[in-house]
Image 1 (spheres, rainbow, N blue to C red):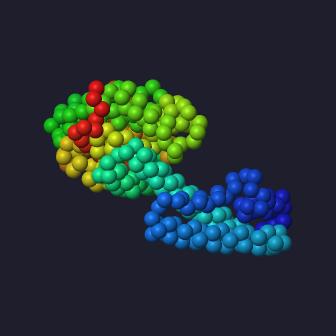
Image 2 (cartoon, rainbow, N blue to C red):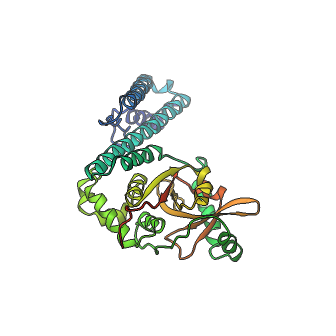
Image 3 (cartoon, rainbow, N blue to C red):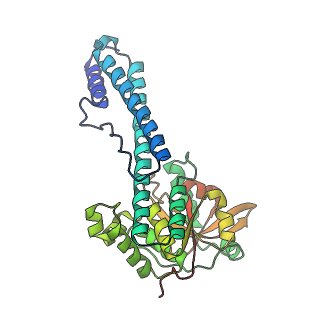
Length: 335
């Protein structure tokens, strides 16, 4: 590598990456292991955390060695290797921190259910569902793939042959709860799946956020604003579904079977703009065969009529496992 201005930019960049000057894109800190989890889970998380801490020390040592070299001895190959090492570490930390956050939220939700005097059976169902909630769908799908899938899906709205095929398919009889005007798609999905007016689902969701210790003080103070701006998490959908009746988390390979049993499935998907960091909640209401493939009818609060999509398209836009709702006598609020 020639000694020029670019060399110094790279050297400074490495200093930033190694955490010495962490003003730009700092390396995220590892999250604290939460209390209230099993010893087995705690040991597993601590083991992963120790491995990540060792990986960070290895990167920092390599970065320091690179910076200590004369500029003429610094190579693009070394620099690129350091960048890759840092990128891999950051992704691993983000994944670890996300998992820890989910565990901490699940612990808080289980504590909430106990505080609300849920019976032991429902608390056990809630815990099992929260533990089963995880990613699903095509991990290799890009934002381009997602946008194209949504375009194809949207153009079929009201298509006669698909409407007819879906009407002869398998699934529960559910009523569309309305069209969203804010970021409250999850409340619409829950209301549709549970057969409740939007107002009932929204009121209960607001109460949940107000009392949910996993939210910040600001979010708890303004629950409706929280719902409309950031929506509900997958865990909150599970908790509310269990509160209104019963919730079971099912993987995508079981969506069709679940619908055939008469239960709607709420699923988190990537929104139509292809924002891979975003989220949108819809309800699968029927499954049917079309062209030798398994298809689904989908209720989406961004549309006035059901949408129809193939298994492949669903996998492209899918974010996580679905939440199958089942009514339970005595749990659904009287209207």
